Length: 393
Ligand code: MG
Image (cartoon, rainbow, N blue to C red; front, top):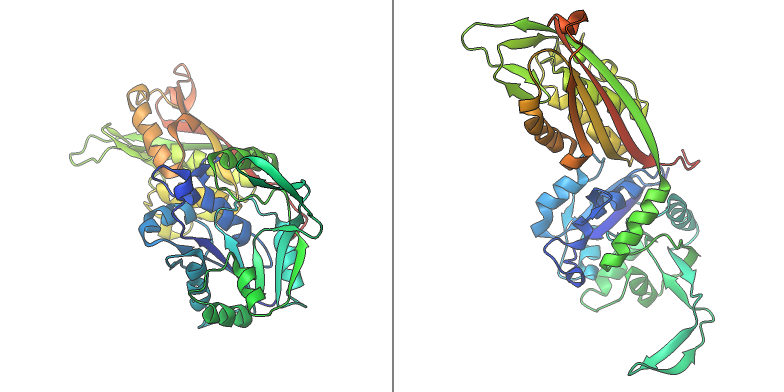
């Protein structure tokens, strides 16, 4: 496979949006908009690496937006979109790819086929961009009155990713540094490169106003499919009266209770059930296959590690967690007083708002092992949304 790097330019301040958060970090169906953009490219089989070009003030936002995705380290952009594109290209000189795609960070819904068409066109062309013919009649308007009708014959709306042979676009960018150009293809044109047009996609929208964000959200929901996973776990409960007992580890918290659970890891039955539910929703095995109890590495391990791994796997699949519903089954401890703290801890671990997390509890009326206080059981159901299969492998 010839190597192709995608540069995602996401260093703009998005002033048109207002507010404090740059638009590429605004939430789109619960995840930062940029995360969706990055995932489109990270999950594409024809893209060998993805590098974001970010603003120096956005490092923490970027860390959050990119967590769990398989990406190259980001680079810092410049004062203009053009400078940022050039700095992204310059950052690749050590290991120059054959092809490069330059994409707007604010286009989060780029179809896999659009990316494929651009990459393939570069087998025979120096540059390629996705575009759509202008369908509406164009009017030249002055002072809110129609002046004249513009002939739309041959007019296209350019989208991104714009693809180029790397060495050629790098030298064009260097040559036109400081001369304002509207996009990378304009730089290529000025340098005399041949840039071919491939079919764009109406859904490949650029989020520039708040309305676009709502539209993107509606569109995104249509491309995702729900998946449900179930998790169940049990661990033995043991009373501890020894001084220095740290407490009972449950749902990622250490509770001031005179019990502990017995297991290879910290035996957090609640986190184990939720982890298994997420792995089940992805159909990628269970907690035991990802973290074998036979591996001494996981002895006494903090189960938050297991849960974070499952959360990252959802992200890697381009999915989002829609909802988690968990039930703890025990006579003791009483869960009610801890419910709020558990929800908050899960919210942190799942990177999910509290209203999409449910923590419930029940007893078994003193029946069975949970009724006799010999163990705690936990059940969880995870609902995730993930991209529909596309036929590309
Ligand atoms: Mg377990």
